Amino acid sequence: MSCDICGEEIRGRPLRVIIEGAIVVTCPRCGRLGKPYIEPPKPRLSPPVHVARPAARPGARARATQPISREALGELEVTEEYAARIRRAREKIGLTQEDLATRVKEKLSIIQKIESGKMTPNMKLCSELEHFLRIELLVPSVEAPVATPPPRSANLTLGDIVKVKRKDEKELT
Image (cartoon, rainbow, N blue to C red; front, side, top):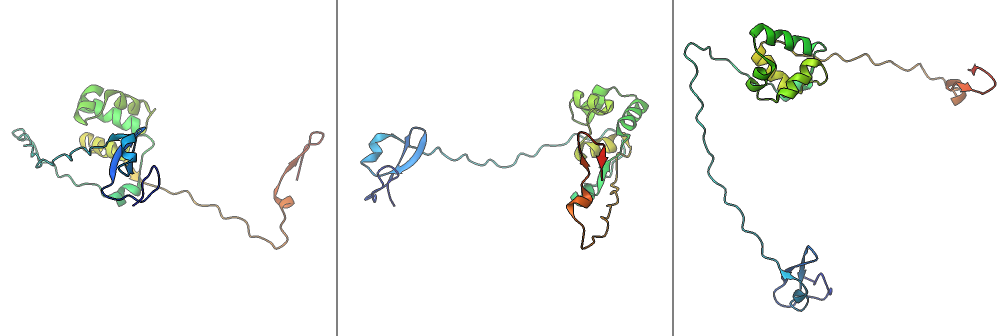
């Protein structure tokens, strides 16, 4: 192993020092140029903490929740009228925007932007809103048909494709 400062072979135990903010490996002679580096102790991993969930309200129905797979999310997109659907469903239940934000664990400003149509909710928030409001926001994505280029001829040139404009003339083909 060679010294990062002088480049000579290190004989004996190499030193780790801090020189101008950089941690370098040096020989004992060059080690005097910096401060000794003491590696911070690694934090101990504590055992996982289990949090008890509150008991369900008496008479409340148990909801069957199924996690949405990543493949299914990739094939879904947010519907265009998401803002109106969310607003109508929220008002039908009789909630304020603030109450809805609290229930879906989101900021009030985010809910306001979503309902005004200024922001599109991400997939996770869409699934939360769908579940809580019992509406459909995620619909299967529809891919636009791809236009096929015209068949190429062997004699096609750049001049056949480009439209040229000149100052004194109108458009030429």
